[in-house]
Length: 335
Image (cartoon, rainbow, N blue to C red):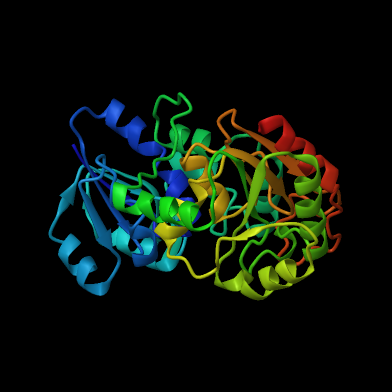
């Protein structure tokens, strides 16, 4: 049984989609699974023994794959590039998105997912309503559309010894020993403005954690987009924090997240990395839905107060109100 998965991005979505690999392997004994993704997502798949080949999307790849036959094609992205590739590949069966007469469509058995997305046959307004009403996690939905036996299979992110050593060396450099390590990732990239915890609330959170949780060390995380934001936080806080940096590679970032016992995070790449590394998670949500996220009984969800929750607005009409003490208490319960 030869299977091809097309899941290009975003990186966090690629990580959580790895949860289907165990289910596919259980259903289709001795199957061979290939995966097409973008270059920036490939590193998080490379140590996974359940994947035979990782293909980087390109024009050359499209031509090469035309000469291959797959028993099952799983196409899980709704952009034109993914749908076009899915249409050109020879497969006996397809589940998910593809092109039909130049239009992005999806198979009926994948409706549970794509009905809520950008290419929904119902249009955007109805899709948003369905997404807001959804009570199933992403993993549940994937297992249903693929007709797999869902047993809360987890996403897979494996760091090899060299990759783990990056975090270990960081620990030595910053004198991290037996303390409770708390990671804070309160940014969320550029698209969803209100996913982020405001800078002043983040500063309040750091100060309260330092004052209320003994024998702890706090790591401040971020990517390139959070560099200015994190500098403002470091300049303003009155208590101690360790800067994890904003220019780490994806795997270096994951190696640093792996140092944490508890990770405080927005609905973001950091959250998906933390989940895959089996960390305890205090995750806060707004305007995206918390229902879709599976924390595997290792986390607590905090939802911002406001009428734009679950609206998926890039800039909310009603910005969230946050109770920092609620996040502090979540960390205490998880520690």
